[in-house]
Amino acid sequence: MTPFTKFLLAACALGVAACTDPGQYGRGGYGAGGGDAVAGSPQDPRSPAYFQQTVGDRVLFAVDESTLSDASRATLLAQATWLMDNPEYSAIIEGHADEQGTREYNLALGARRAASVQEFLASRGVSPARLRTVSYGKERPIEICSAEACYAKNRRAVTVITAGAGA
Amino acid sequence: MIARLMTLLLALGLALPALPALAQTGPLRIVIDEGVIEPLPFAAPDFVAESAEAQQYAREISRVIASDLAGTGLFREVPRDAFISQITSFDSPVQYADWKAINAQALVTGAVSVSGNRLVVKFRLFDVFSEAPLGEGLQFGGTTGAWRRVAHKVADQVYSRITGEGGYFDSRVVYVAETGPKDQRQKRLAIMDYDGANIQYLTDATSIVLAPRFSPTGDRILYTSYETGFPRVFLMDVGSARRRALEDQPGTMSFAPRFAPDGQTVVFSLTQGGNTDLYGLNLATGARQRLTSAPSIETAPSFSPDGRQIVFESDRSGTQQLYIMPAGGGEARRISFGAGRYGTPVWSPRGDLIAFTKQNKGRFHIGVMRTDGSEERLLTASFLDEGPTWSPNGRVVMFSRETPGAAGASALYSVDITGRNLRRVPVQGGASDPAWSPLLP
Image (cartoon, rainbow over all chains, first blue to last red; front, side):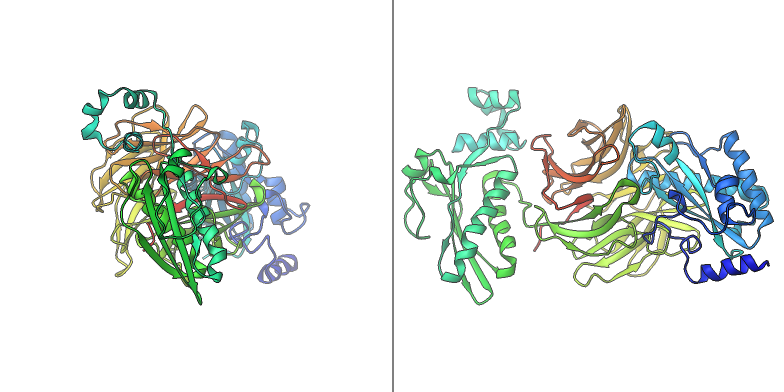
């Protein structure tokens, strides 16, 4: 373990927002899904910030769908590679829906989207023990116009990097 | 009065056996064909204060009663500045001519006495045009702090004597209080009187909370919270606000809980590996039973009032539709067949109707249908209406309406099952996911 990651893990233990997920939303914070600061420098390829900004932390879905597009598969392949290279981290995959739908159904739909990502990453060799999922349904849009331009960005699954090698 | 009462009853869809005979009389027939209801005019003079301490309550109680009645859309209050007679003593004879002259067809009089923190309200209801009381005088007692409940109880009596139906005013609503924009919305569980008064918060805003549901006796609430970081079903005691998670299996989510009429069994959705199915849980024994087993989404379960069946939504056909299955699981029959998608079904307390959310052509509707799916009726239309809940007497549904765009916010509305009388429930701040309690004891 590099000194840098040791520092990161210590920071996580103290409750730095980007590391304490689950619950960046659930506990009242508004973190990575909304583009807030993520630990580390985007220039450091081993940092969660690099994962978020360079690897790409999210994939988008068509209306009422949870299947992965070719572009999404390419992003997830890069995510899988990063996770394999950085075994000191785990991930929580957040599934989200746009606001066009009832609350309960959207929770279930977000769960399907998160599970699609989880299955893909596991199929590329990431240990399932490092991958947890959560659905926010339509509770946490990142774009709030009520038009397809925003809906398209809200129908997403976001891979949030957390400290620790998983259960 | 009798003609007016019959008009009212017909508008409510009651008194059907008498319909053929009535249909032969002109005016009533017009009312039915036009689907118009003329609200019944009533007078509710200030109640008489029987002690100095009662003064502050007497007027307010008559105002709450008038607001309850007028809020149904079935009654209209005659403005008090039109009154010829004043009611200065509860027991003086009513001057019927004075009330006829201002066309008040029903008259509600009452008196309030207070001793210490104890409040007693007496009331009488009069049929002005037949110059007779309608039912016996009654009295209700309570603490002074509960004066609004006493007023609601009087209004429930008046409503019930005139319509022949149970009332719904002495009831509460648990809901999600909302603040902040759509991308940073804060949610708290809150409880209030059915008319938006007496709001109390049951949780703080540190975790997202969703879709609370009352127990059949109104003393407990099921809801979904992200307290652990993942959606989990919680059970809360309303009196103490103490709560516990019902489900806490790692790697799963649980949500969409609902009580069975026995108050002992809970149904909910459990998601595992991306698949959502329905489960039952016995609160006393902790025994869990899987009710559906399909790769599709099964959610939003609601029991029939006899506890024998469950209506729920599923996308097993490819889109969200409504199904009914036995309470223990088993073969489900689809009941929704119209255009669009159907979700959040809720069985009426009378057992005859299912209220639901419908999405069609980019609009959302609250609707009702019979339990075999026939006679579908859409009651509302907007950018986003969802999550109906029934009044205790099955005459009114309350639901959430969200407005579009960056400044969009959620509010509670109610509508009669005839589609008339759409009203915004006067709640301070944003509000969603209402659940109506049974009538309070």
